[in-house]
Length: 244
Length: 265
Image (cartoon, rainbow over all chains, first blue to last red; front, side):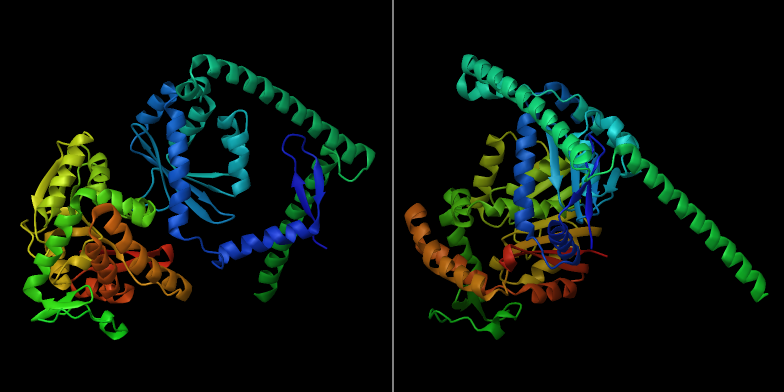
């Protein structure tokens, strides 16, 4: 039976996932990669246009980031997602970014890897460090990719100013204060919930291995792989000698 | 000359165009010399409300088609671009930003009403400097050989009387290695979508035209001219016959629109 283990990045515990979800997900990825599911380019453009509009509108409320981004113009960074297969191109412009699904020329830099690796970098606290430690491969100008990571680290959008445009400064301040309180509570609650779940699964139900046990097991597997490769190389050497 | 409406025949639709004494104007058969004048009348009539109607008829999707087209141009700062049948300047605006002050964009259209609307619109939006406005016929371009890095034509080719001649002209004025991109209505193979599209084109469009511009006939011509335009493979063959290499096309919205691309060797 196939069992998919979800790796909880924060706690580094190992949780078993129901088989049916794993099969469904694997099926969808297989269909997307084989071309059975094909998104019309119009739909892709709609998604990109919406995302671009949202990002550029938000950037207007962080002039510092917008200026840093303008310095990167007119370079292009390619995001090559290998699973599921999808390419996205980000062109830096004076007033924001352009998102594209196709590029005729070569980009100045390309980041390639699985979607999960990109999500880990995007959600990491220090995106620069997360990028360096990730499984993503960088081609071309690594400086461009790292500049983007630094930019995302320093992003500071004045959400209150954005709300004030529609609701006025007083209402924006009240809404902003309430929102900050709510997000803070949600964050604390989420972290506590995660810790409680991990503790329950690992310590009380003993359904998952501890971080140290998992690392030890992976170390053993890695050592076994190295030993197997050495053995294979020796056998090939002997076979070559015998055949002479 | 016959003014009788002509039912489109799928065999006729695969022909490039009827060059000779007569040609098609929508479903009507007219003298070749008259088509240009009739098309001119249509666009003189629709010019003032062209952008509003585009948004209404396509529910704004034409912007996504044009956005897709821009991805295939490969335009860089300093390039020289020709936006033929550019009308009200949607693509010209984008090119102007991309080519920068050292590049140039030529907005060309055979119809002076459309050109005036385009020029006024671009100037009102603050675009100037690197844009030139030229009234030109795609079948006889007033430019020297090997002048442009990129040529685009969005929703204009189906109105041209001699499409092969226009494609040869594009090839002439492109630099070697230059790209031609033609965005145009095409043929969908999905029978359900085709039926819905026909119903929408021949029922809703003329009514919209009547309500917004008080001109239903121009929008009936629009629907008919789409049906008379070559399909994807035929147009690709025309590109190749005109001397373009690496010809390809990309279907959009189920094949209702297609972007054709060719490179001058």
